[in-house]
View 1 (cartoon, helix red, strand yellow):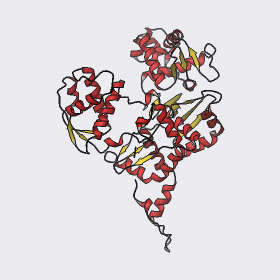
View 2 (tube, rainbow, N blue to C red):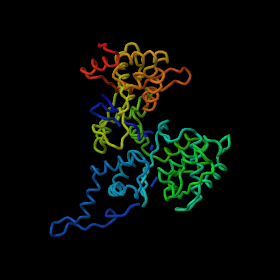
View 3 (cartoon, rainbow, N blue to C red):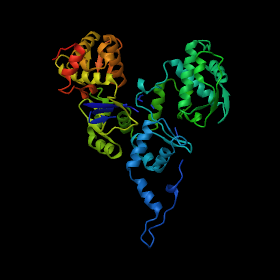
View 4 (tube, rainbow, N blue to C red):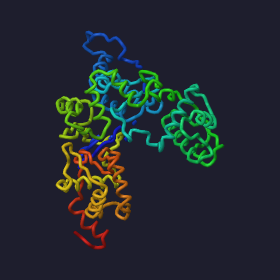
Length: 447
């Protein structure tokens, strides 16, 4: 059985024995120490100076470097004050990490005396790569206004909630102005402030932001941290010179060499799966032509294995790591998606894949398939899905499939398009499981 990991929020794929690595959903940065020293040759005594031993260790991409790389990809940043051991680990392997990351991904590794951050930019932005705490465009707009507010403050400068409310109201670019007497506007700001606290952009000194939900006059005292001005990444030109997000991404590639290799590595490490998009898909052709080199390189630097099929590629791991967001997880809906993968395999003649491994079906066909799925496997599902409505089940399954890039809905026809990655998933009950469970749910009937 296979397991997919979410990208960095989010994600990748594994069998119940092997986990594939995107959480979404997503997740900015000097150095001192022995690596800057001058090391003497081996003395007459034959003992190697400690500095040289450390220097040689740093040149190897060892287990410590692998752990450090994983931390960089799975965290927005590593704060020295909160995680001193992780911070020190990355500093010890800084040179070899920078060399590998620059060569394979083209990402800047920012090492600051207060934090370390890997600037992770995707090839193509995905919905799950957003801020999961946010629920609307308004949340993002308020967040940008709040960041602009912190730029005007000194580090450790304190301010009241009413001050930032006033500035956000003045700066807000939306069609409709912010009204703090509106409950939804206040809840939006609460989500923004709590996210900024969680990322340590702001430090709460006194008060409770949750009380702002019930009264717009509620005050909370905050302090601007040293990290606030480092949240935004740097751009080659002023943002006002770009007309769209696509232009920003294109400008980044213009500064890169070996673009194809870096595109492939970014896709593999930041997505649950990389699917072939056409006969002339240059990224997928690169993976096919250099699959052995890619496989050796990935396995020698990370805990992943490369699985490459006709229409899809995944990174698969044999061990779980607490930092990863994985599929399937412990949620009941994950088991249902595994059962769906098995049923699709059985009905391959009814729903034949196209030349790129995609399966297309209408909403009606999908509803019928879900009914059949529940009849076949539902007796072992959680009570929520055994007794819940068909509409609720379909909605939850579709949401999870989209989240893991296993399905997309066609905008004009409304049909569903299963991605080839769904073929990597399959789940069945043990042979001795069905009888008892069926009897309990169906009042004595057995298969």
